Length: 324
Image (cartoon, rainbow, N blue to C red; front, side, top):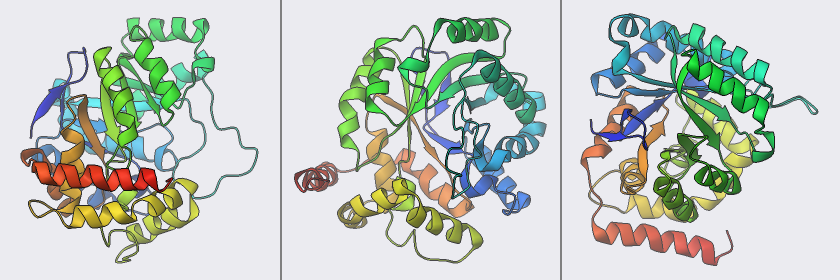
């Protein structure tokens, strides 16, 4: 495994991070299989684990805490643990009740959520606390003062944001005194993110890329082949959620481009392209299969040929020209 510095922090993070969410954290997914993924990630040198308080209907955090308990108890400094606060609905449900309260960025809730994450993960402190989808209008002095006090008390080391909004990313780039890192969606079908990634990196903000495989839509045959309950869950997400439907629509041509790259697998090509951006510190990748973990982890030692990079950029430009 290779490692990169996360912005101007003192954290060295693995170029591939394990995302602990989705069906991996679902109670229907056997814990021994979830454990196999985590233990193999550690064996491969992955030291960065990303989760969220509300992920997998509030089950992902305590599951990850149970699985990491033995290694954290004697080697806490080896690992970078990141979780999120501010979202109050259970992530993982395919349907959401209309009118349901989604976010709470009140100082009391953020501190309570951070404390619950620390307890769930059995980690003593979070290396990174991310505000989950916060907007500039929701960042006020009372919250900033409480976050400062929480950091002083040792609840977390660095503050981050998880956002899919480019204007909010630009706000973060302009305020490096607030945020140390940003987890954003960035993949080969989102090359329009590159200017804001440059601005974040120039500001010293660590940038972590999520959705690097487009929720599986960038890999031919990944979504739609049902061999397990996990496949059925991801298929349902692809069809029922607006974000899944959009990714399915825009990924068709790029999927063919990635499949035609000879020097590595499509998944590896998607990851290698993202890691080719020097502004990216790490790619977050989630899976329920050890074989998939190995495939993606192997991408850190692979380099796309220049012709392959040009083919990916041409495919993206065609998407843009077609008004996607």
